[in-house]
Image: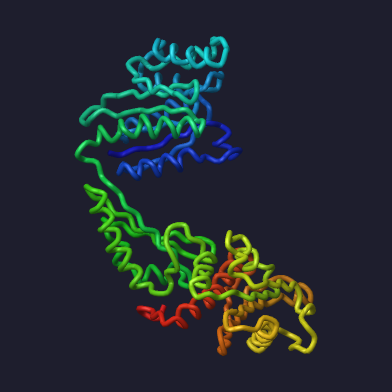
Length: 421
């Protein structure tokens, strides 16, 4: 079964509000095993909405429309559906009685504009709305050479749309699918430390599979690998997704830090807590990238011994090297942290970003960072240069620093990488 989504509303089209309905509905269709091929946003215009509906009826089995079923003059989805399906709008008495019941409960009288909401395209199946006044409806439209298409119109109010989708539309679609229903299982592996092109090289053959499918999604400073399997049962779909996801993990090794929606800093915090360690963090010329991320975690007080963000190298304690943005400088900063926060249960992380001398002695961040990690008696320093100055470069540098800490924690506990990643 192939589907498409249509969202109506000039305010959505112009970017005044974000279309959350389409994203939510897409996830629900995916879970049903329905193929979603198109999404369209159209303003509150009768002819344009009808044209988009006709296009959908010609190429998709199910067209789901959200919005435009209210009582105002710019709510024209009902009229557009009737026009697209070549039907008349007729009063549905059961819908009107449902609306009257709701208004009676509120102690109000139904006005003419509210009565408009009970008019549906002739032959439409009403979808009653117990959480609002606007009923949805479904219209089956015959097509030449193939089975009928189903046009389903739902309210745009998210709470109402979600209720009708879950309680009425999804059972309707599941019944139409019957034995052809497909179950989906998805694993999302979150990676850091490898760019999108390197990951593509390592799993190129897997990305050419047709089922399960494997795709990449690049974010700020990290890349997600998404594995999606389709099968006739939920168990089979899960087994197929697990098999390929495990192979991805094997090939990417330490680059995989977690799954689902886990934040990278949360994964590092879990490692610290698992080993009974706390973190002493100092940053200079980074804008406090990591301190902000760690402090945003709900359990930050359990893993942070203290943090210090130094905006300028001039603020460092006297007696240190004049320029800390070097291997020797980062090592010196980490040693000062170790002196201030001694103990076998404390991990030191010093992140020293390079400033742009052209912007002044302590000017703009340049994208070059030296990271020092102290664990026990060992202190290591690594240079990271992402070659940029924007927010993405700052996030890549921050993730690089966190990755150095993560790898030290993992190797110190005896973990081994499959391929040295």
